[in-house]
Image (cartoon, rainbow, N blue to C red; front, side):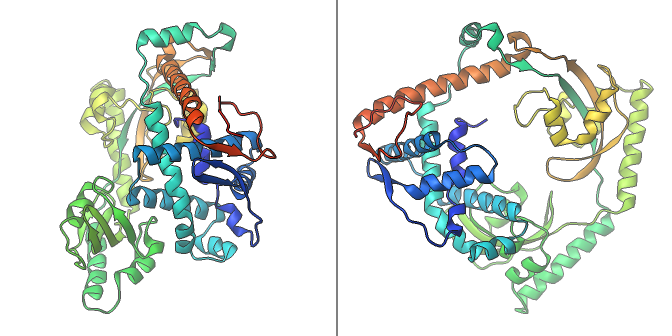
Length: 446
């Protein structure tokens, strides 16, 4: 959950209107020294339409005023974001647009511009939005209410207004992932080495080969390029090689959890790297999957025969590092709790819902295929640890959920107080044609 759901909607505003060849623009508001343009509001309407959600002009206009107030405060407090942060958001956003259009070529054809040109045009807007987000986090802080304060928040909610919690389950799993055969690893490594030799001999470039052959979907279309890479963002094995290179140097072929790479360091700027790389992944064979399935079938038999407990089997055999040490207990990536409802389960693995329907607490499934969070195939056994029936939210079963709601409520109160305080001493003028009743307590200079 974001700090303020309405604020993060701004991350997608602004791009669609670039398709219009002629936009009549004007200033419809000023916050400090920052103007709000009519095109900003039009973009919000277009974005709402693209996401099939109702457009609320007043709410959208208030979001724009809030963002400008945050940026004005960031100026005073010297709050900034790095080029790496902006690049990361730009890349994420462009991936989202390309996914919507289907291919990069379709996106470029629609807007009549190359992807790098679109990114350059979005840079200032993204930078401002990230600064506003960072300032927003600084204002709201990290509200951490005590259990007593959470209980007080809960007790103030009328019973009829308490959220209805649908049926949920807690799950454990034991995961086995197929290993690449030595022959497959050698084949991938040798192929990549042949590409590297062609670059070293000047027969071609890393960029050309990356576009043709790299299996990294995040960089292949950009010639294997990653810009402004800081420490801590990439696979540790990848970074260990990258940060040892000199400008223009090409690494040896090396292995990470994703496959085999070589890197060409384009430029180092302090602790930021511009680089190109090519990724080649070993190919799985039917024999690799069969061998993995056999291993899990044997483990399943040991558990069913009572020769080893499910939890001990997880600690001894599971290939999932995130759950190996806690008996395989799965954590919901959306809520950070151990509880899953059917909507989330269907997003993670549609087969799970069907499998769980016939299970009781403590039952384990037969070995089943699944795809991990990093999109790698494997097999697993699932244990139904607990099934929770639908109920009104309570502190015993839903403390984390109520704590999140209480902390969010506290943050919203802090932001509301900040808006009222800062808007008193910040110049704010809004075009009466677009001004309306806002949700927050704004002091407007009109």
